[in-house]
Image (cartoon, rainbow, N blue to C red; front, side, top):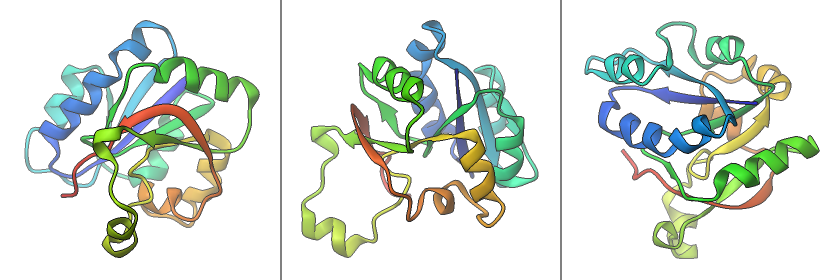
Amino acid sequence: MLSVLIQTLNDEERLARTLASLIGGAVEGVVRDVVVCDGGSTDQTHRVAEHAGCLFVASGGVAAGIRQAKGDWLLLLEPGARLAEGWIDEVAAHTARQTMPARFSRARGSRVPFLSRVFSGNRALAEGLVISKRQAAALSKNARSAEAIARGLATKRLDAEIWVAPAK
């Protein structure tokens, strides 16, 4: 079972798009829970999360969200990212093998030319991250954000695709 962790700050519209792409995973029983770690939003982010049945963590940051997650594996996503059809089977197979962390492949429409990626300061969480809860908890001791947890990790590339969230 998988827990989804999304770190937000005034992301009500972007959060709604991401949550919509997770519905299939919840119906299939792959997604156990969704934890929204908020950094002090002043919009309706908390309302979107609560209406979708998410656990809303307003203090303690990503480390508190990891502690609250019920699954043995975590899927870290940026608000606004959308998983493409077929992600459920790929993630379930990956977590069953209990291997290293993994990232999604960018959907064709989300791909950026190589030089643009190099000079734009690539976001480590742009392709999402599937990681064991144990490893994420260990990394969260020194990282204050989901982005910091994802940065610098050796990962496997999943065959499933993600529509990357536009930069804020």
